[in-house]
Length: 343
Image (cartoon, rainbow, N blue to C red; front, side, top):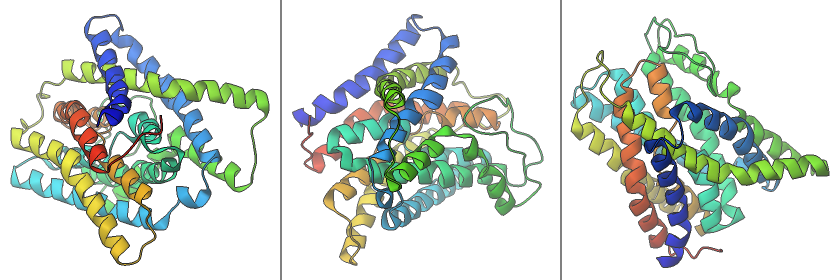
């Protein structure tokens, strides 16, 4: 346990440092978009490019991991939508609650943390599941939120998601429209470029490789610090929007529990069942995708909820709750796998 805490502790300490800096006013809230831009468009793409270059393409597109992870994501999304319906939550709010339940913070936390815990071999399964969340899970939940809506997303602003025209009707049409959004996200492109270079056995020109390496090394600490600042900003503005139906505490607690406990449990159970049927899943792969699911909710979903006119206060509280409790739950999941960090 102490060895695991020696890895997870600094990661969550950097998140706390970012929160504290924003709370004390040392980091102006106006500076947060700049930090986000640096991480999303410079540092994180460089980190993922390097992992993609050093990971066999077959691991980045593993069909067994992809199928299993997508099946569990569909179950989680469906379960949260049913919970929202039972509690009387508006469909759009329930769709975003489903997204934060199914979409872990894989980019800012997952890749660097799991590689630190499990070694470079964890990069393949983690990046594979990350691609699925960015391309399919997000698009499906946005489609569910927007299906049948005639209005444009509220408070549209430039970012990693493209402007999406609201579909006239139908979840299918909404999904096709929402699927365009990841094309403006640099992360899938950087992973794809890295995978292509790996397949073709290409390398970067030495000066370029040095610059990419410097940016990649900055990705993890700056991303974690930024998460903390984003969490403070979200908490400061997390009052229920006046046009929304007040959210149920049961929904908040239920979604946090689903994210941190049920989601990884379903992934682990699916892996065990798949291996019993003969699927070629190694112990490190099972640990990697289970711990991926055990991560807290993706912090950027609160910005998406605000942009699409959903209850961003609810989403922000789910992200805050899952991130706070994940230090305990994620560490216990890692301890349960008997992980011995490499460094």
